[in-house]
Image (cartoon, rainbow, N blue to C red; front, side, top):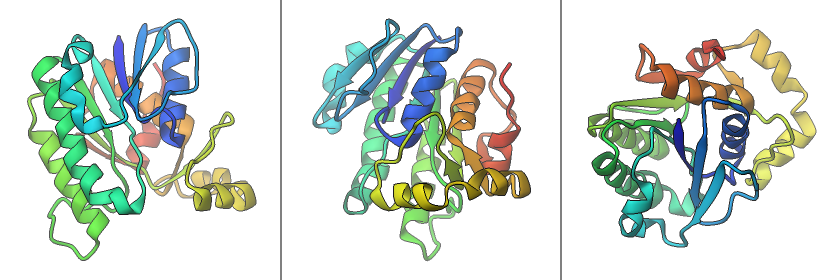
Length: 217
């Protein structure tokens, strides 16, 4: 399986990249982002684009892939512009070039697909999910994790989040056992993406509990 990975330098993206590099079913990974992934492995290649809105200029390099794992992060100031507009700009190029691709988008718990709720971020995420599910991919899955426990040395690029993990991260494994509908971990996110890309799934929108139930085959 050939995989495109957006956001490989972020917490979730690093975890997904680790699982891809370990999984024998994945034979090639192209990490696309505003910076390099920071990893060097034979089956990994970086495509660094300072302006991801110019993704269409690189369409030839993005052709022939089986799956896209979209884990791109952003600051609050960039939220609406990048969450919806950039995601769709990239997804439209990929859909045109890779009709047999499975597109997997990391959304978030509480996403509002009615696009009418009070929460700005939930409306924008919901609008993005709705648009992605209309594109002509072979399949598209929206992952809505709640709290994510980082594993295997993965760290968050968001200072406040990493401070929480440093101080109280030891609570997350316990919370995951007690509240499997609220907490997942970075390894499970990677496993879920690869399994969905390999075998599909009955649900197109997966909440935290759904993500945690996916097992490595």
